[in-house]
Length: 137
Image 1 (cartoon, rainbow, N blue to C red):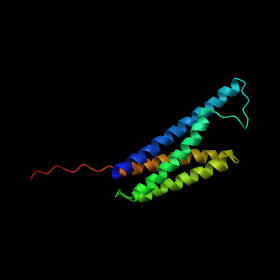
Image 2: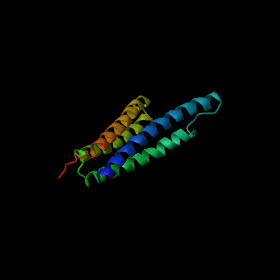
Image 3: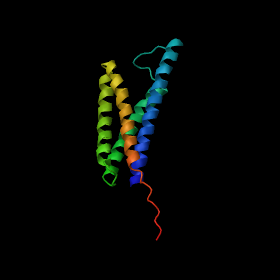
Image 4: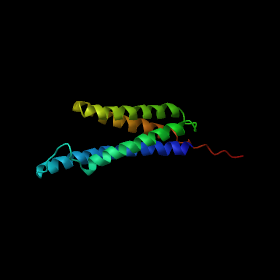
């Protein structure tokens, strides 16, 4: 189960990296479309925005699985780290909702995303089993 915990932690971290990339793609696509004369309104959407929204749900599911698996393994502080990841994911959702009304809070949404990746990868690193020294009998 340590390996499952490690893989889930790594998947969460990689998924956050893809989130960052997708929102950058969304921003540059909006700029290009606006330059090309596309009307950017409430009904406008592009691939980066859509991916960012969908992948956020995937990260939430991965975080829940990470927490569940943390109770089935002996990773040092694994439950605490998985719990922190789940808490940060909940905060991430709340920041996303509030940031549409107060765009400056979007900065915290971005920083919190990086915190999710950092804590998840720290958990993954803790799940690595140290190599045991070879003893001759």
